[in-house]
Image 1 (cartoon, one colour):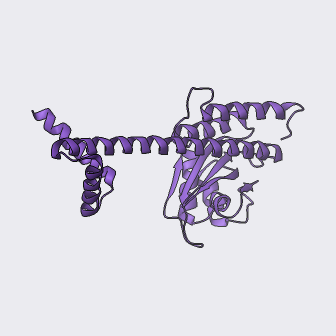
Image 2 (cartoon, helix red, strand yellow):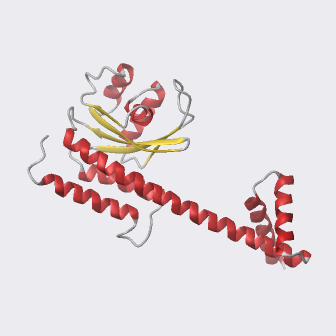
Image 3 (cartoon, helix red, strand yellow):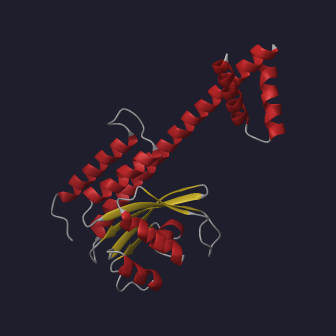
Length: 247
């Protein structure tokens, strides 16, 4: 499929618009991780030629030659991409795994003649309408890795132009996802700080302790109970609210 003259700037501008939306610059704030991922897969189907289905595959890093600890299909645009992931996991191989672990981009031009994963390809041909695929490494984050996976119901569904556009989309997606996760971590940290502060205040008031002594008491409880200090604080706050409700 050859892009018509002048079409490439338009598609990249549309991808950039999608990226700005995912970043939150057009909506007044950073979106959550699930929202970003859904924007990406839905955008891929709408914007990129030949894309009939899309999914983002997340896996936990494992030892070479072993299946990942888990595989999760997120933001799937339907049942077809989820089934493709299920088949990959069942066979322990496939383009999404290779894109995540070995290469940044893996393309299958024709499922019917692809020789790299014969058992998987036979199952895909029998159980799904997918006839060509494009898998792009999305990000690597500690023990978690992800890929953007695009599927066409036609053989030869992706050409070099589409691959370049998909890589551009995946790059924007990775940045937006990183921003969303930082925002979630920040909000979580603020929530934890508030809980700990609330628990400290309760202890200071009830036992006539200063802030340092109250925090040391929380820390000692955390060690004795072998649970994070924020969980101890949450239990204390919950118990205090229950007690007040009874009074």
